[in-house]
Length: 175
Image (tube, rainbow, N blue to C red; front, side, top):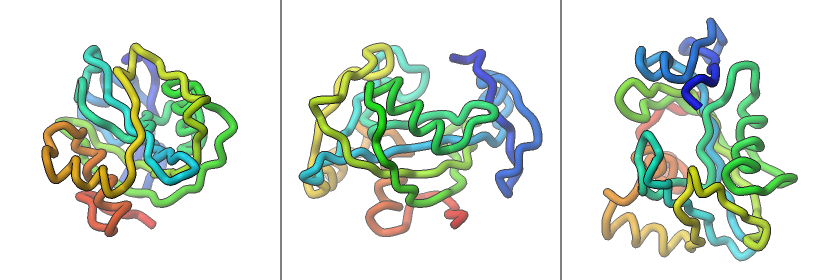
């Protein structure tokens, strides 16, 4: 995974080079990411609990899919790849919600796009290397979970939810 190549981008999301994922994070270079909020037909969000062996934020709650955009790949391609690799689902129609710039943590600077789509829970087959478990919650339940204990959530997931709910995440919206 650390040997995969990522495009390095400038402030305007123009590709200015490429480097290994490990080097990008070592140097804090700006790169691309994609996130997906998947909902059941009755409106519950698929939430993942990251596996214990994840390099960043192990065992924390995350959005349905969070993916680095590999070199030469589009945001949408990365989102679709992430759904297939992490959740085992394909063919989901995604709606692009926004593009933003955010610092995800130490030396983790990304320009990302957020998508949403509808998933049939019976089709979900998680990758146990990446995901400990998944569950489905309503927006009301999710707000209560956050209120009870934010430390159980990935920092970026909290910011994405704040952006989704009221347009006020800790990021710079680009469109």
